[in-house]
Amino acid sequence: MVCAVVDACREAGCARIIIVVGYRQEKVRAALRSFEEVEFAVQEEQLGTGHAVGSARHLLTRESGDAFVLCGDGPLIRSQTLRRMLERHRGTGASATLATSVIENPAGYGRIVRDADGRFERIVEERDASEAERAIREVNPSYYCFRVPALLGALARVRRNERNGEYYITDVPSVLLSDGRTVEVIDAVPAEDVLSINTPEDLALVDRIFRSRKGEAA
Image (cartoon, rainbow, N blue to C red):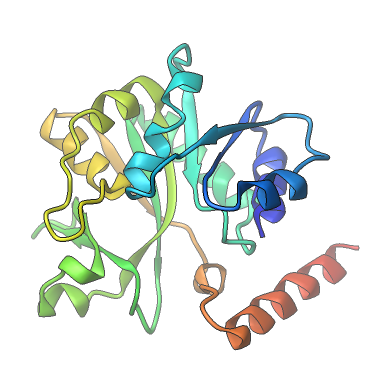
């Protein structure tokens, strides 16, 4: 799975690729040993997605440009989606750009909350969502693009979630908005690409789609 994500990043033109590892990291390192441009950051404790990104802070402090933040378990990611995100991100001068998807069954995903004028307001995780928010079908498949200095500054201000003690990367866009910075949202992720893998049946379906795409590209 993670190799497919790395391939998409390479195809999109990423010059550096940082993989955050933790539990059973030797498996991930072994899977990526053929990728020369890959660097690793270690998340010693499992304290959420924001904490995971923060674990790579020491590798990013000298970066002044843009960075994608992605999940390593989404093999259906497409390089063209990343390129569309980056184009919108740079074209608008945004501090953060999110690519979202509208799906029939949003269960399990964070929801995109917009204001009365349709502007992005925040991401709410399902466990923290109200009944009305859970009915939202526009979801967060965890495709982000950030200006690195803005990302690191906002991460330092993300508060620990009271329910589970975790730090969410999903809180970063709201922090940036509160600072008056621009946060862009683009509905760019095909519904098929956000399929999650929670069961052997899910794995078989994603594998079938992935192999079909590889066959079409051959």
